[in-house]
Image (tube, rainbow, N blue to C red; front, side):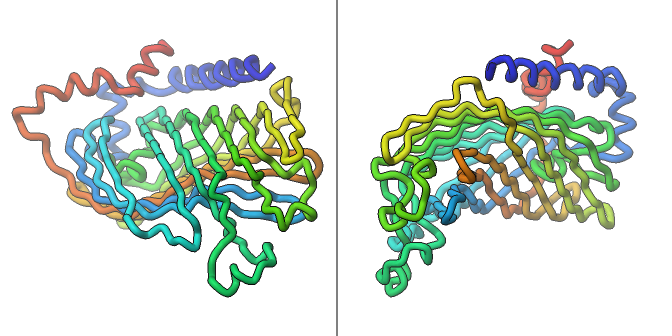
Length: 364
């Protein structure tokens, strides 16, 4: 049943995009580019060099008779990204010695890739964290956390997040997602577009001692005291994006997507009870994702802030639920350079392997 829903969702996205492609000029024609130029200034032929600072917002919240919020002890990161056409290469490094001992130690690995095409977009992510702390420490009534300004720590709590989001931009003739999030275009006039997104996600948690501290176990129902689990989800989310443009250079972008999610669950509680959903879930759950950005963009340089927050709900028996978020915010400043003449002959080769072009060729 779960596989059937996955196939039906993919077919729905493909059918809708084929209808849209039939209604608008082909994105490779001169007529399309001329019409689009009234709203969007294309700078993808130049090289973007961007310096950025990254703050992450990944975490969990158990909502039950007591709400418990967990976070890995992440540090801020600084990085550099170079972009040309659809290709973007970057690296970042955590700011060392900022993991406070009062929040425990977290071992983490994160790999996030975003592709913003004119019509299609993709998000790929894989993140692992070992070691979490409880942010609302006041719920654990132990005096040492108050006296030392420290936090309850779960050093063996390990979480893994992996997934893919794929979306289609309906009004790609007048609207540019790229202008806000990879900045190789400029949105010249205020405009917006409906979006349709399909996604698949994998979430795993594991801990020897359970996610509920011993001092709280008498107040939390057994079915909410998870020890380990694997949760696979498929989602379909319509959304809308709009960019407000002020004085041709300043912009504000808001882009919420809200939809439904079906989930396959397999988990064990602290009393060794195994729970599995064998049908792929007969109930659909809400799912939300939001992107936003604000900044300044001119043909030579740009600066601003952009953010993405991805929200998932895991329904447990009774009124219990586990919510996890994947998110980050970028503070950036960058400059654009022309491609040196001796390297311009490679541009056609780069465009030949653009993900958006490959997807269009498959549909046709």
